[in-house]
Length: 118
Image 1 (cartoon, rainbow, N blue to C red):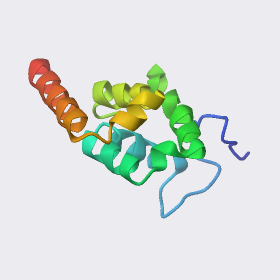
Image 2 (cartoon, one colour):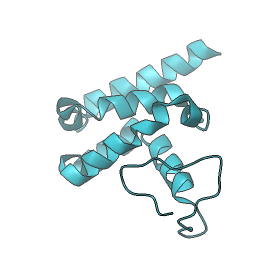
Image 3 (tube, rainbow, N blue to C red):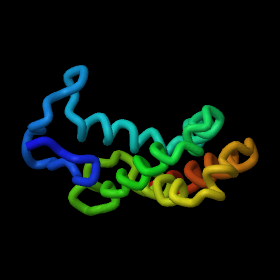
């Protein structure tokens, strides 16, 4: 049974869609969504104009399934990851992340939240 773009991968069963480079679709999406917690990576995506691409924005919307508890448990840093995914749903944020000041502010906020969590 192949997964369509509208369905979410099963994390309890092996992927029936095969692998890419030895990784399942879920593993690749998990790695990517966790990278979104890095404000400098978001800035890079914006500078490459990916955040203006409607197909890419739709993919970011699809990745919101990671906010469900069944998937959140796989995130190393759920707070920053899910916050970035939430912010990326907003067109204004996708434009503002080009600003070095915004990137620095987000980085500082992530650092402060990690210090408070200890």
